[in-house]
Amino acid sequence: MIRYGLKKLLEMFLTLFIVVTIVFFFVRMIPGDPARMIAGEQATLEDVENVREALGLNLPVGQQYIKYMKGLLHGDLGTSMRTKRPVAEELAVRYPNTVKLTLVAITWSVLVGILLGVWSSRHRSRWQDYLGMTIAVSGISIPNFWIGFMLISLFAVRLHWLPATGAGGFKNLILPGLTLGTNIMAILARFSRSSMIEQLKEDYIRTGRSKGIGETAITWRHAFRNSMISVVTVVGMQFGFLLGGSVITEAVFAYNGIGQLLVTSVSFRDYPCIQSLILIFSLHFIVINFVVDILYAILNPEIQLS
Image 1 (cartoon, rainbow, N blue to C red):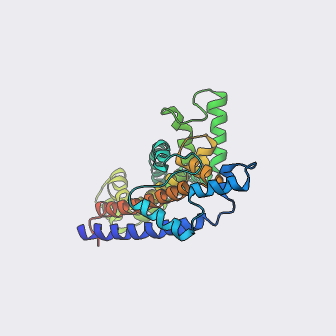
Image 2: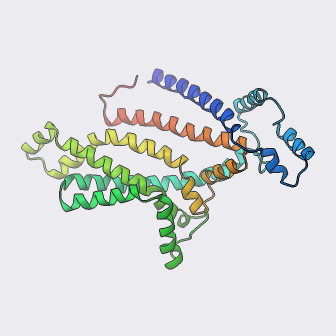
Image 3: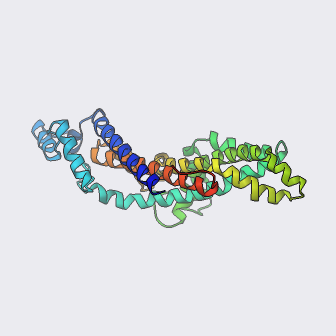
């Protein structure tokens, strides 16, 4: 187990190094001059050069890279070109909001998606199955931004039950949480159904039925646990996508999270913010993959971590 953990840590650092390097050079290929944007359209060439020097953009790209990596090794994510504040402070304000939104979205989508998939599999080729899969297909097909606008129109504008925008208390999380989790719920419903149907065809299920074990026990005690081994992968990856893919939802609801920060940073060519956000998104996937591997071993002891 210790050897496996050390191996994963080494792979994690190597992956992060590659990602950071690629992103550093890639963002500098984005058209536009951040110094010109910060100085303003009416600024003179001298003003633009002064801003470029203050930001360190006048240095060769290689020197900028070395300076950035040295700061990163000391935990310094740099200073935002747009706000002149440390990037760490920008993230400290917005990151918890995105985590809360993601937790709300993943919680309801996992519960509803898996239950809907199991329910459909138990009533295969019946009206319950058709209804469940219709809901799932609709959740995958309908764009998130349209769902968000419809929820705002109904619950915020017409009924006045929930706030339409902002990041405050739990009420502010309901509408964006529902919007963000809809696609994930639909994906999990379809995947859970397929996985359960495969398990219900296995010999051990027929053996259990021949011994008189009830359908409820067969479904939840046997088939469900084995089907979850493959579903866990989907849940883990979708959780990573939610943390990094909340850009549209946060924009629709004017939610103060890291997704909206990424949009703003790209618009202003804020290199330090862009680099730090993509670093965080990459770290999410790496950590989630590690957790999923551990969950594999818990759900199926025959799987060995090596």
